[in-house]
Amino acid sequence: MSKRNVLIMGAAGRDFHNFNVFFRNNENYNVVAFTATQIPNIDGRVYPAELAGPLYPNGIKIYEEKDLVKLIHELNVHEVVFSYSDVPFEYVMTKASIVIAAGVSFRLLGAEETMIKSSKPIIAVLAVRTGCGKSQTSRKVVKLLQQAGKKVVAIRHPMPYGDLVKQKVQRFASLDDLKKHNCTIEEIEEYEPHIARGGVIYAGVDYEAILREAEKEADIILWDGGNNDFSFYKPDLTITVVDPHRPGHELRYYPGNTSLRLADVVIVNKVDSATKEGIETVHKNVKEVNPKAIVIDANSPLTVYNPELIKGKRVLVVEDGPTLTHGEMKYGAGTVAAQRLGAKEIVDPRPFTVASIAETYKKYPDIGILLPAMGYGEKQIKDLEETINNTKCDSVIIGTPIDLGRILKINKPHTRVMYELDEIGSVTLETILKQKGLL
Image (cartoon, rainbow, N blue to C red; front, side):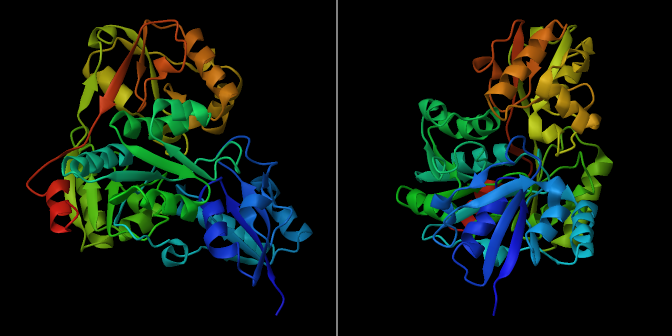
């Protein structure tokens, strides 16, 4: 039987993982290409031979997704595997239609086919969309476990935008490690909060190798998910976060709907700033899709540093980049703080944008007057800094998980907004962890 030629559609994350665990040593398939989207500057590269294994001595080329149909014909593709996240169902089926019309099969790999088993207990924190509050939920879980004397190691969904061989297995236990690995803003936003609380977090490219290293020092492993993807590891407990600010999205986005169906526990986050209708809709949808899940409502209380920099001021609001772009959120913690504390005006940064930041607004025109903290590399970080410094405002509100003022040289007063998870009612993450024997 001849091998089937496979093309994997991805965005430098789930695609590499699917290859590693399902295709890398599989003699029945020949992966001829990856395509890339969502993340800048990842096409035109090669998934290296050192990671691809002995069946791929020349590595595997990464192309732009816009060339998909051309590649199907030129590379004699038999099967296309869709392997990225946080996209509407219509988007996935449109890609499927394009592939099928080109004459080949379209495939989604299943959870059991791609989850790696661990020798240690795994808690997975997922979401139905980017920006629901996975990070604050993960922080709460880690805090509870650490207070119980457990050695917790977090493993983060991949963000390998640099040298893939060097990024095979990355361990972060100090702020110096962030510099050592030349982390982007997106990476720092996810890693630093764990480090700041005395934790260890792993990431990289080869997630079986990462898991085996983490197992050496962990009592419990936390899978800190990315976008709305499901876990790379077989979990003992799955916690999925939903967002009543985007009611209905839990039913219509891939693979967030899968993440909801896999949940043992569903956190309905941000109820303190959502509408009654939004909360009711999310509850109804969760009950229909996953009636066995334990549902917990939670607030997302804000802590604002230097609130005097907001009240009565013309402010520039900087929010988490992925949340505003493919996450499609119209506001974040910085916006809520501006409204609650009486900012005079939220200043539109679009007239002041430069280079890649201006391109981001062209690609995502619905972002509006908020500034996404884009930082996929040194050049884009500089573009973000220049855009902030160009913007005519009184002060800057930083609504991202990290202090951008530590990374950027901001030429005007700036303040941070922090947010945590605060469950409502008697059923909490603590009581569930105890019931599961994890505390």
